[in-house]
Amino acid sequence: MQRVKRFIPVELTLYLPTPDIRLIALPLSACKTLGNKIRYYRLEKGLTQEDLAALSGISKTYLVQIEKSNRSDINPLYIERIANALEINPLNFYPFNKGRAKNKNFIDYIIPPTSLGSKIKNLRLKQGLTLKEFTKKVKLSKDCIWRYEKGIAMPSREILFRIASSLNVSVAELTKEKLERRK
Image 1 (cartoon, rainbow, N blue to C red):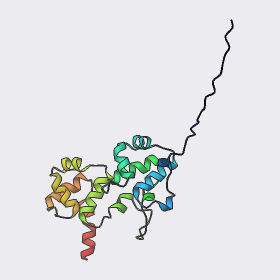
Image 2: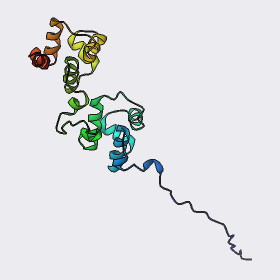
Image 3: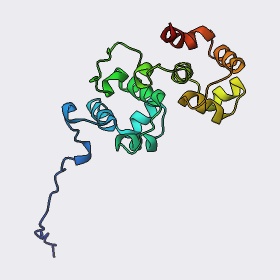
Image 4: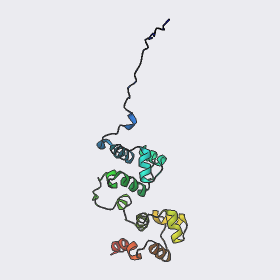
C-alpha cells in the first residue's frame, strides 16, 4: 500500500518590519539641543551610536548621555572629536544668535577668552591637555588650577610664569587683554 501525502492547511502570519522610531531624526531646524543635533548628523551619515563612539574615541555610554541631553558639562574636545568623526564643523552644533563670527576658533566660541582664567583654559584645551596632565606639568594642585581657570583666584607672578612656560606662550600673551583694558 502506498502512502498518500496529505497537506494540512496552516495559517501563516507574516510580520513585516516596521520602521524603528528610534532611528527617525528630527529635522535640523527642530533640533534645539546639542544632543539632538549630534543625533541628526549621526543618522544622516547612517552611523549607529556604537560606530560614532568608536570613530570619535569616546564611550558609547557618554555619547548616549550627550544625545539624551543628560550632560551639561561636555568637554569641548569631545565635541570636536564627534564633529571630526561626522566630518562636519563643530560650530554647526551651536546657534549663532549672539553675533559671533562663524570663522572663530571653536574653543574660543565655547569659552570666550575674556579673562585670564578662560585664556589659560583655552590654551590648555587647544594643546589637548586634561586638567590632570596640566597640573602635573605646572606642578600645582588640581583645585588650584581649577580656581585660576574659573576666575575665583589669581595666580601669583611666579605661578603665572610657570603656567605660561608650560603652555608655550609668554606672560604678556596671557595678560594682554588686561593691559589693553587699563589703558
